[in-house]
Image (cartoon, rainbow, N blue to C red; front, top):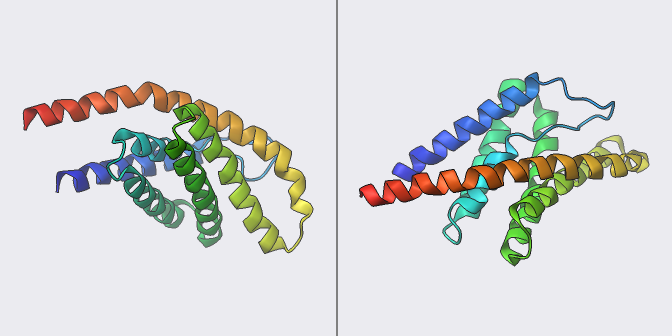
Length: 172
């Protein structure tokens, strides 16, 4: 029951970050580039409790956040693009984390890059052309930069999150 409440708080925080991100005028003239602030929550959930279902919890919170924020702040097309990006991103981050060969920053970079790959594949299907592939270099750079920034933030925040968990366990 307690973990459900904690995940509800993480979902609420991810929704708040989605809203904050929607208010930030962040554009380099390339559609689809965002900071990815809500992905910080997914990253933290992946690492918060190693080997205890963190992947399932991260996936659940991510999907719920995308659907809810899509209905609250955007439209169905945005939800479809976000779900495609999230699927690729999550798979890349989960695999990167499982190998234990990459830091949280590296795993986050994988997530940023593959999120853009997933969205680009949806764009290719929607517009029925491969011409949008010229975005690839820009999206790889953007995913790398934003993924690194979120990875650094996650690396900074994770010890505090784990300390809160340890304190909670000690009070039991």
